[in-house]
Amino acid sequence: MTTRYHPFSWLLVLVGISCAQHENGHVTTEAPPLNSADALEYRYQLQALVNANQQDRQRIMQLFREYGFRSAQADTANSWLMHHDSLHLHQFRELERRYGWPLAA
Image 1 (cartoon, rainbow, N blue to C red):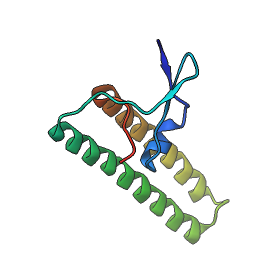
Image 2: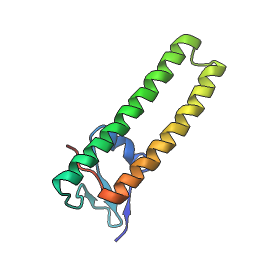
Image 3: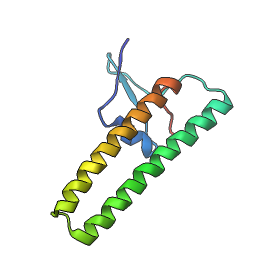
């Protein structure tokens, strides 16, 4: 059985919603059992991703307010944000590979 995730599933996890859809269409929120130390580390790392994500967006909004949404600075900032989002996605995928699909806390 293969598990598929919506391309933006990691965003849902960052706001506390999780799901995976298997080939048969069944949606599950099961994750492998973690010992308490692993679970604590996993939560810590997920929260660090959430914090980084929010800080990036606050920086971008500050720049938008200063220069406008249609400025050259905004275009550069959007490229920067997409790059940072891809780095965060990579980090999330590594966490998922190591710990399994996270459950909403």
